[in-house]
Image (tube, rainbow, N blue to C red):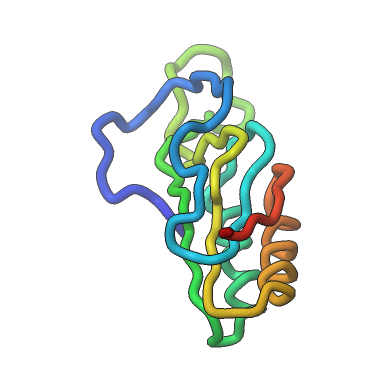
Length: 135
């Protein structure tokens, strides 16, 4: 799964995502893409599940780009841990998404195949998405 090799700060505050995405909103590599339409944290496991769904559908044809990387650490304290004792250990990594961000891009396959592959990937994600293609 996707995790950062090295981070400056091991633990991070939650923060809040509001507004629209300004970067990564246009197709840069492929002909077809999957664009998110909501605000949500998407975990490395969910990105990997979506990637596997696309790869399984492509079967050696076409090319895939993942345009997001989970670099935000999420901490979790152990079960039945009393209050206090500080912040929990890093449990997993997420990417914080805002509306308009391109998640995946595809190239080298027909449009109907790309639609099906990205629809299967969208089913693995906790966020509303839409299919986009370059003009």
